Each structure stands twice: as structure tokens, then as C-alpha cells.
Image 1 (cartoon, rainbow, N blue to C red):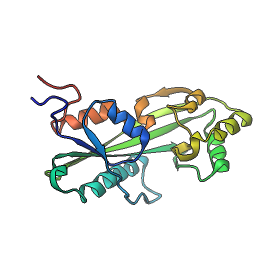
Image 2 (image 1 turned 135 degrees about the vertical axis):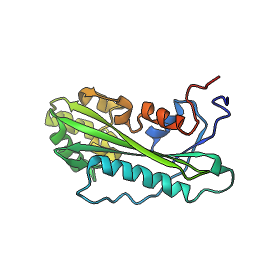
Image 3 (image 1 turned 90 degrees about the vertical axis):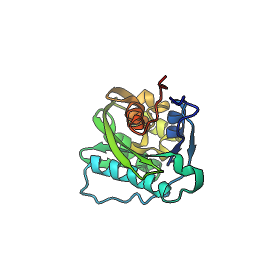
Length: 204
């Protein structure tokens, strides 16, 4: 049986530093290739449809550009969204937009969905799944929201907060996978990779 260093390499179809850190924590060989996939989706799609479709698009965009020994790899695509009142909250366009989002989220429960797609670059075999985590934000004053936005942390985050950063101070509780909220549910990913013969914990 191959050990972790000898297993098929992973290609992460994402430039997200958070996903890069998470997948690195599994101690699997991987490289990053940006996907540049179209992220527009119909407004009537469910959150589950949206994250699975976008995760697959990202993986497919990288798969179609592979060559040579990269075709031995497993491509991983992922997409995360925040949903409140059945509305997807994306990344804020500016500080005022971030404050508006946080004002809506504060004191309430919302849902975070992450889709994960894996493609065998050698055969084209693909699978996609998703995870959902429920997150409850504390009640926040306008001053607290403004102070958080001024840190700059919300600027490129769906829902305008980062649970793994200063934004952790805004969260009351979560139900489900923490890493799902960060952007890559590691337990789900490890299960999916096993289907391609890649094991986080090497088999002897």
C-alpha cells in the first residue's frame, strides 16, 4: 500500500489561502491551480445545487487544462456560501455592504454550505457532495460591527466574516462541521478521497 508521500497527488482548484491551509493539514502531496471558472448561477437554484455545481465547475476547469504527469492527480474543487432567509450572501462589495450583512446576521442563525468535487484526472470519473453547518452569531452593537469591518477581515469573505479569524469573537455557536464554515470540510473530503484510493491515514 502506498504511504502518504507515494499516493497520487492532489490538485486544489482554488487560490483560497484558507483551503490551502486546510488541505495542507492532511499532509497529502498537493499543488494549487486556479480554476477561473464562471461562478454565475440561476437565482432559483437551491444552496445545495449552487455549491455542488460551482465546486464541480472549478474542478472541471482545471481538469480540462491538464497535461503530462498531472493526469495522475485527483482534482479537488470547492465552493462555500452563506445563506440567510433563503438568500445567498456573497462577498461584500465594500465596507458599507459588509456592515449591512453583519447587521442582518447578528443575533440570528444562518446556514453555511460547502460543495466539494473530486475528479480523477486519469479517467475523468467525478463525484460531488456538500456539507451544511448552522451558525449562530451573537447580538452585536453597531460599534462592534463597525470595528470588525475596519479590521479588513470581512472584505473577501462570504457573509462578511471569517470564523477562523477575529470573526470567531462574533460567533455564539455552531452545529456541524467547523471546517465547513472555514471553506473545506475535511472529514467529507477525506471520505471522498478514499473513493479514489487516496488515504489521509495510510493503510499498511
